[in-house]
Amino acid sequence: MTSITVLLPAILVLLADQLTKMAVTRRLANGSSAAVVWCVRLRCAMKPSRSRRLPDKRIALVLLWGVVLSTFAFLIGQGDIFHHPAAHVGIGAALGGAASNVYDRLRRGAVLDFVAIGWWPVFNLADVGITLGALMALWFIW
Image (cartoon, rainbow, N blue to C red; front, side, top):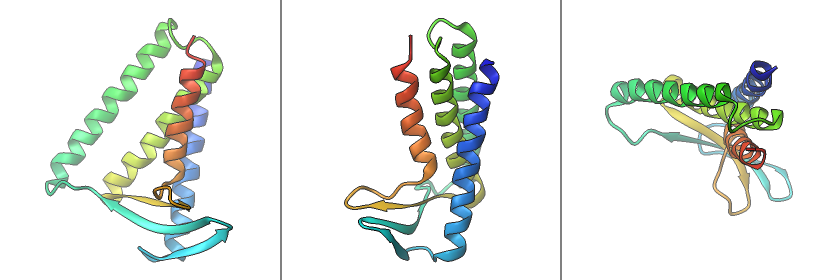
């Protein structure tokens, strides 16, 4: 049960983020935007890495992702902190969002953000998964 409550949300967030990014890049050029409703716009914004040595950064990124994934797997396996299944779902959503952004960095060399709401910085579905997933995991921590 624990594996599916972490893996399913991770896969769903990763797929939803990647599919929406694919749709946005097919319809909008980088820097362009389109109104959706009221104060919500789709804005294609590539956020490249600030590092000039991308191959070194890619290796570090993959290693860091492995450490984060291993740490969460250890914490869930211990069962001392994350007892509630909703915490597992939150962790899965956060890991799926992080995995999607890591995938973007490795594949594109940049993360594509596309949701613009008013004055808030542009973000993507992976960011939503990370934020809401982490909040959910913390809410149900014990």
